[in-house]
Amino acid sequence: MGETTAPEKIRIGLTVNDVRHDLLVEPRTLLADLLRGDLELTGTHIGCEQGVCGACTVLVDGTATRSCLVFAAQLDGAAVRTVESLAGADGTLHPIQQAFHENHGLQCGFCTPGMLMGACELLERTAEPDPDEVREALGGNLCRCTGYQNIVRSVCAAGRTMTADRNSTATTTATTTATTTNGAQA
Image 1 (cartoon, rainbow, N blue to C red):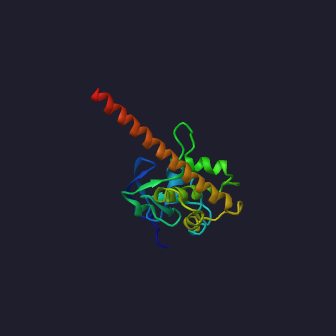
Image 2: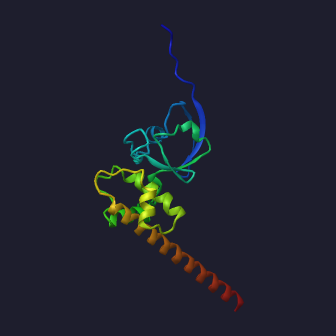
Image 3: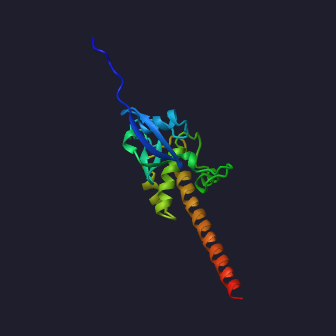
């Protein structure tokens, strides 16, 4: 019988949650396995392993991606964001996480990381989506517990909160700029 040899590893560099990683990976290593195993980011859940359930959704260069369908070797130079990137270092919840909490957008929590990341992508391109847009964006994410209404409600609420936060920041910045400018003229 012939000897079997391990596949040659491939060197990749990718950024995960704003941290650069230079890694040697086997060509067959899936992004989900790299995140959970090598990088110990276990918030990305693996459900069906066929890209159907959406539990493993992460953002790759800003696009919602099923991490169980992508080989890590394909992502050399990519920026990956996982659910761990959402909460602040002090534990402050991201507005999407807070909205899911306040609107009962989760029950068992297994699908939640994928839902949150899908919602994140949607809210980065559509500030205040309507319920139909939310359903369309999250249509590939399955939840066995909630019936989806609270998830849709949560994403819409997060959009409103994030818009209000942006408007508040813009108003504060404009006021500070006006005060500084007026003070400089005096």
